[in-house]
Length: 145
Image 1 (spheres, one colour):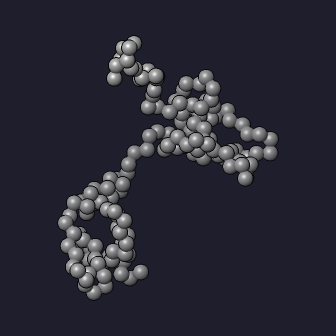
Image 2: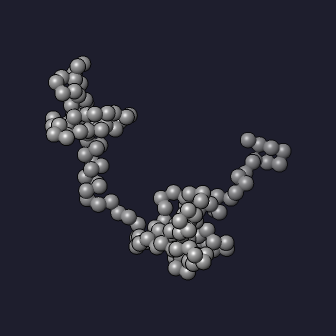
Image 3: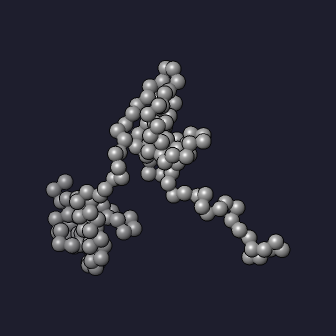
């Protein structure tokens, strides 16, 4: 879109926005490594690993500010173990993901009445019973439970 002054540009230059979350402390530009949350009902400050998403009532802190954190008098500081590095998926996580993708790709055969015992899950696992479905996710129950 053109205006009399030329093409419209973003109000914020793109080089200012960073995908890395920064420390919430004023004038600190270091990368955040921990998230601070206050539990007012318990007079507790909880400092833990960096939250997955930036929350409005939480504060992201760099390593220096998280180490020097103090709480008001009468408050307790709970320090949860900080992650030493980025979390890597385990072999079990990757296998479960691969199995879920394979299961979703299989055609599902369903009889109109579902047969005796209700609808069964696909994929050769005839021992589990489908209890509920929400979108592409299914809740399965073992017949012995």
